[in-house]
Image (cartoon, rainbow, N blue to C red; front, side, top):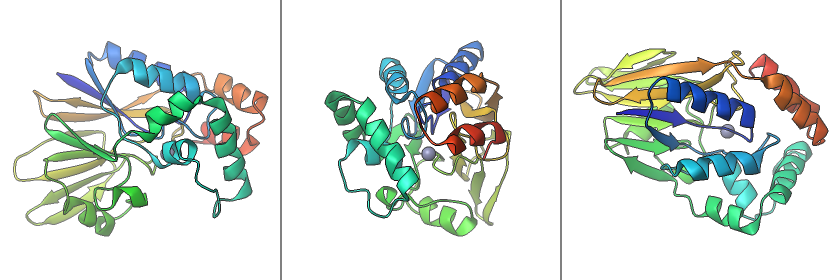
Length: 241
Ligand code: ZN
């Protein structure tokens, strides 16, 4: 059984479609989504519908929450607030309810999924170092946990000797270790690589593989401009940041 682990789609339909096509070609039969389906990108509704049709375990991301819960946008810079308001206007009440009902953490087969961290997942902390990873590991009861949120694919591994962290492309799961793995972002990569990122978890072989997929980002950029969303959102896609 092969799982495709998707995160941070951010309304980028072209990237999502390219990733799903790649996952199919790679023999994935199961899917999970780690949140931030909406926000930034020009196709929040379409991406939401694709995920709903996959009918896969999904957890809520901070952007899903900002858009779905009508909380005041104090503390946001005006450009970010405008983007959230734009996305809110694209979604029906039923679609916002669907997002609002998503849980923060889910256990799927033998692994766990969360958007940010397992310690206080509703706080949306960013895990860039071992210290932050250590806090999450304290709440991890499965060997493997997948997260997103930073849009940077990094893996942390806890062994009896301590925690190591770094970039990865393939990881083989070994006993007596715990893995906290950021799967990168489908719709807005920020590791200077503009290709869409996702992970395949090959369960029988205990193998985790990071995939990078080319997609038609020129079309996505055109849609961002046509929607009147900030130009910087179009530019960052080709820069991967
Ligand atoms: Zn995100």
